[in-house]
Image (tube, rainbow, N blue to C red):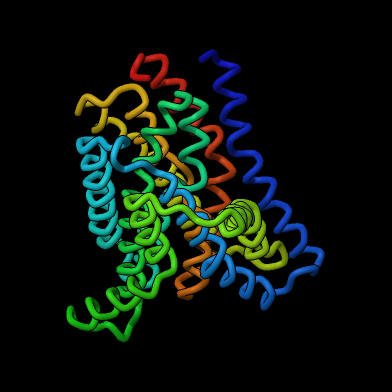
Length: 319
């Protein structure tokens, strides 16, 4: 993989995402979409399109053949370790519970669902796709469960451990992405096949998510308002794109991961902040404007950081 090939790969993987968000910013600036419409579209993405996309991705996995206990366990423990580290480090300087939840949220959660498979395929072909697909449930379930835990922490009504646990469980069992993940795993394990008309419908609905959610995300960024959280958004963007990948990939390299498996872990921990972060932040009203800023910044600059990361790992012969 040459210099120019890596460069254009990074650009082609990230620029379409940026342009879709830019379209959302444009229609908001043109007042084609107002604040209320943006909220309704955000809720629609959260309750329908993203869950269908998640369900489609997970049910396509063959868990019987595509299974690596070491990779899955390492990825899962890596997510938990990253979450805990960010919670402790940021908790020592951010005292407001809502701000702490918002910062940890954008720091630990990556856009693996939308970027994982395309990036893995570009780097390692079908073997990369097979390995990257194994991590979809590993990413989806902890990401969403821990996010809901954070949002429960941010709720000032949850003042006791019992109330916090009850609130988190309540959010989990009602969260559309968690439900879609569970149904996808079941459908994969029993190899359930839908009738053609339902299969086509599911694929069409899932296909909408990739574009519409990004456009809706853009509509949440208003150019007419001041950006009071710009400094904090820049710090958390640098954390997401530089600090997290450097630390986590160093650990996985030391543990002996190489080739497509390291590539899947790279995408999991080096991807920009997931656009679903902004959708969920808006849905649960936990600093949605700040979250949208971080998603926009990390998506915008992820082409550069992905290029540098892939080039270095390739040059050092870890890929």
